[in-house]
Length: 427
Image (cartoon, helix red, strand yellow):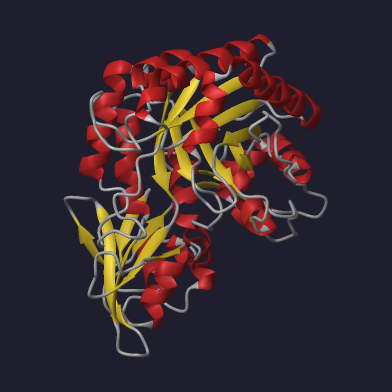
């Protein structure tokens, strides 16, 4: 695969002609059908097909996959336009494989909310191994709060994606409740009620795994939280379920701060089946403008994590979103707007901005002036920053990656991941 940086006066057609591929292929692989025109400095993934099949009358994804010894889902990964309705038409050219198609298997994980756009979900799931639905809260008595998730679970199975139930202490107002979490950790009767309710729900709805997302845990509950993870993992493993725990991005065991102190990497890593490092939010809604997941900071977290957790259990967190700050930034006043990575590029195109790339953080950004004359800066992710993150996954032989989240389209990312790796799927 090739990463091409757009230069002045280049068009999709001129780039396609240079590499000997179709303009339609570049458009699909990079999600450009929603972008008015190319942006100077924009990174495009260029995939060179090795084998192409022209669809004939009577062909189906099933028959074509069997003819070439690939799976239907691999065909969808390489031809995302077929992923939503699984329909093809005579004369359509389907990529069977690309040059330098990856063979290493990785686990690709992510999160969704029940209100996810159906088209975005179906375009994403061919590239996913597991997916957690956010999320089940609980009462002080240990009863679970209901969630409308049945149809989402059915859709995941149709793409051979493992559905994960998610439990969290996040309240309806968007804050983590450390008191109710503490109650679960320290009251054995309530904890067992939560576990029984989780098991009952997983069995009833067809979940295959559990995701535990407790953040801002009281420092004094650190050991109790680790014991809770050990207890619930043991109980679920006995019934054939797996457990993933989301971990704050620490760089040492003694790191201070309300988000870090309650997470014991070594203890949780030993107890859980897998963990996901939440390696994002250096640039965040209320903070000063900067890269969301700077590679130098991410590396420090990975280096610490592998020193105390089996690397085959670790998923590297990747942000599938961007932030748009209005300048000048004012501490305590400014608030960045969260947007998708493809939305960021549309904003750049509409405002004739030029994409810059910061080598230290390995992250792209751009500045623009809105209609009212206000200056903005946008930090986002592109195929270059994604490549650097997966280089870490490979360097440290991690299990794979976990995306926060799957709610936004990110075509170039999925084109990259689907070509670089063989993505694990359930049977």
